[in-house]
Image (tube, rainbow, N blue to C red; front, side):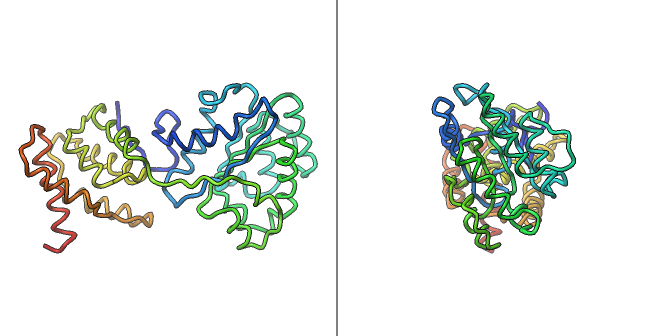
Length: 309
């Protein structure tokens, strides 16, 4: 297996790890084809926490989680792309992703509503996933209350469900731009945080099965760098994999410096988890694993540097 770690944008569905509780909540809200009701979800969390990866996974792996996936149509839209910068292009893009393309250069809201309602009439429930939702609310002159009122009408009729991803809550985004549409107050919120310990462990295990297998010590150091943060873990794994290219021992001081530099570029920082010191103390005891010296070397150097010793 080549480098199994990726930190540039959303991960592909086959590389997605964890988020079991969040996926259960999302698909429980959507798995209502028998009642005809659809609930909408607003995913909220800081940058680089995995919101895009979660939405992209939902859009491409829904068949594994829904009882009757044939009754749904999913449309994932990255609102940062040029194809989403005007109202017409956004609505045309959504319909194309839902499998209801319209050969038109313009798309009035009434025609968009009709096309979505027509899908439901055919027994297909549209789910519209809008990533980077701030891209819409920051352009109130383009995406007006009329758009959100139209979408709210579709939600009221259970003709469509929306899943959004944003750093701030939809209510806060609406207030910042003085939107008054009731669209913003109908969502159930899902706050996305760091990975669970089990999910983080699952991610580090990928290093053990790649073509440059990570030792136990290298996997522990990956975890110490990344903690339970998905972006940090992916970055740490990628950098360790790259550092092993020539078969020489990893230069941990150099890697740590480069890791911190990369984090600063995306407004993240390297933390010193409390368990790092505990892990170092534990590594002083007799250990059967070859990881002992690697853990000691890395953690002690890290602690000494962070505490100025």
